[in-house]
Length: 276
Ligand code: OAD
Image 1 (cartoon, protein in one colour):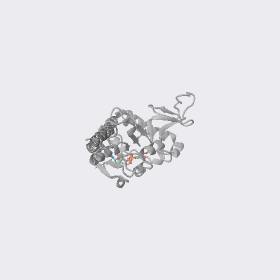
Image 2 (cartoon, protein in one colour):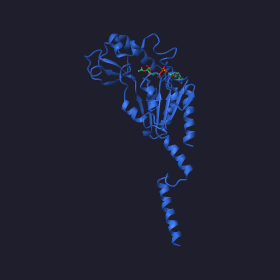
Image 3 (tube, rainbow, N blue to C red):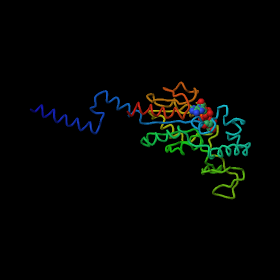
Image 4 (cartoon, protein in one colour):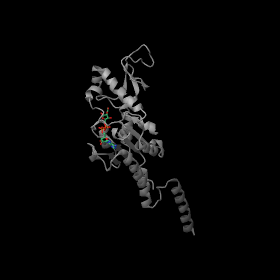
């Protein structure tokens, strides 16, 4: 009788424990599934020019690449800006005009990432982009870090203050807050030799992530090319690209093809594997 009572009360305690802490008494197999789902909680996505290629923005290193007709040193370094500011401002004016033209809009890959993010707790998803376009934000992505800056922002050369910017910029452009100051602005773009933005937040997210997805980047430009090596050992590293990237060997799985097809395909595979 005492034994029966003891068994009953133990069962009630264990049942209560299961309701509050599912890992406590689950059979071994279910525990594993539960842990696998938990393991995929923290997601970091890194995007490069390839994700915006199908929106009509040329990649950097393709045959129609953005640098075509210019040396990188001329248009994407502080030295280039010092020696020929007009050329550099004009280069980014053209890029900005193109981005704001009606034929450039987010594609199915940008949209799929935004929808995926919306289905997850905000703290579990970080989108790091090397792109200076605003297509992720236009698609609805929220937790976005633009590590190489933003084409639709201007920076004051004297104070570092940053302003939204949609117009052409010339050496005669007045400062938005001090109209008598001319030509003291530059595009809010990280040039070669400068420190990418928000590196602390980026590193914190990467060293703690469970799934790292790299989309449409050639793996040639550091530090972004080295992020995959900073992920934890158990992290699932996935690459989505038309072609092999320089760092492809560091990924566990590859989805080969155009981002507009492969990003939705990958997200579906992720859901099948971890949410069904
Ligand atoms: P790249 O031009 O170096 O590489 C683009 C990558 O996208 C290549 O690996 C292509 O195979 C792939 N790709 C092209 N079209 C694609 C598509 N439709 N779907 C999937 N993949 C596709 O561009 P990034 O790697 O982004 O930095 O370049 C990195 C940085 O180099 C840029 O942010 C920029 C540049 O210098 C700065 O300006 C600071």
